[in-house]
Length: 345
Image (tube, rainbow, N blue to C red):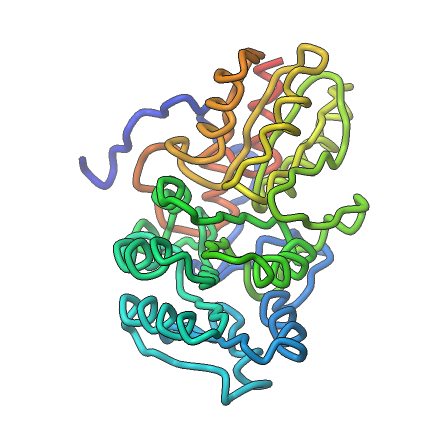
């Protein structure tokens, strides 16, 4: 396939750019997901890990030359004797973390999601997951959170890891979610893969009386016309979309699913059965193999068959560029979501 011709959209409504709206520019590699003026919290992962380390001396931090770009440098400054820089050797990183876990430590391992899912899969499977070791793999740049293109866009990481037995998968929405997920996954006896937002991370869930619980989905707002089941920063987008659609008198419910595996099927099915609403899954991931397929399987298995749609990334290698432009192009900005949902109702 040429670089200028993309595969057709599969199951996801294509978004079109508004010609009257100027294209925004951002750093392609690391760009904040926060809108102008939005509240943010700096380095929530690093700060939460530092706080956890005060009472948990077995917590160690390990990375593959990416401490600064995963906010693990905050932990390294506070606990230099509990920080291990393994260099650009991700496979070695995973097996070294397995060795530390065998000795009673709880390693928090950071790298980019593309490297963990593609480059170290076999090492995680054989060295960590099969052994049931408490290694916490926390990876930046999940999905479309960098503009550097397919080499760093881990749009298929959840699909890759969902098939790995005994691996818990977490996709937090914002800074509050990350801060509360860190001690929760540390307390979990077993391996965890967590998608990670870094830098100045948006703060939105504190407005919804939210608290993270491992394995639990949370209804953030109710609505009568459609239910959005979402994970990661797409929950923030869903909440923004709900506000945009209020002007059209469209009532949108938002169910946040921070734990992808194990999936909270009880809550999802309860909400999907209500009122004959359109059910929409929104995720920062390819349409193949992620939350959308997990939710669809759960509903069909239980005989729950509402009208169903997905807001997700296409089954294609994505373009490089500024994140606001890319999010609009691939239909995961709030404005693009609102346009798409209007056509479905």
